[in-house]
Length: 433
Image (cartoon, rainbow, N blue to C red; front, side):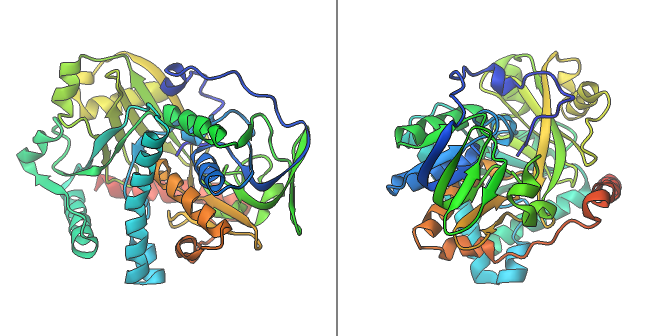
């Protein structure tokens, strides 16, 4: 998922341009109390708030900027089963039974997302269908092996195609293998997020925008301070990737080194002929390749190609970004060569070292949700359900994730970014082989 906006990109995202936001609410003023304090009004924070409020708890959400102004409102909109890390960390660290539990919960994450959409009448352009693609024989073998393992160990079946049969799902000569499934899909993330916020408020949740947490005191009760007031609560949930931001070292210093911001970028074309869209991706699925430096793309409800990728591990926006992204898009779909580009935007994915989600506790009553590593559209809803269960005293499912061991990125605060840049260069070379 995309995090805080890149200041070098001044264009508004397609998502922001295609919704009408309510006027921003007043920031927190004065001192209030709650049962649960949530930091961050993105998907994870809002889903947590909904689940907790449904259990009868008084919930306050503090958001540094606007609702879903970061990752949750600007990501690729791809809602995907499974985890960015695959099943390997679960299998190696927790065993096959717990790994199966984690897999089943990732399926439940999609059901929870669709449940929110249905329960609260959220109009967010939800489309079912997902296509994994491979652009080399080596990557095709890897894709086939991954899909076979999912079917053998987890009972998850896909329609795997090779050679000319791939064209039935995507009209591009770039790909030599594909795997299609219908559980995953795509949506308009900002419409979904704003719908979650309306749902949370309808349940009595208080959401304060422009209320950055500048200090979090831990004790018998938690106290979060902002520039204008404070919230005292028995429980807390850190759900705003606050370990990456300006106040991260003050709010959760012990988590700071376990998350790395990786830049990723999206372009949006002008609306295209509906017939062309249907020809290029007949199923209207969301698409992602299986390279380490991946491309991901889909069509919007108004027939724009939203094409993402072109990562940056240096936190700097790549030069000539729009031209480079348009070139990558044309390499996949030759008919889109020269298509007008109306939007370009970007931000940061919150990756963990092993790409597994990083959920846990800081003490007995402060929970954190981070490290979605690009799979947060659906997984955040599951995270909200699990943290609400844990607050209510049923932590068995939350602890499946809390038991995953996470390591800090090597190099410390000065060298971890250069180290990651070098590692990324190595993986780019592997993708080309």
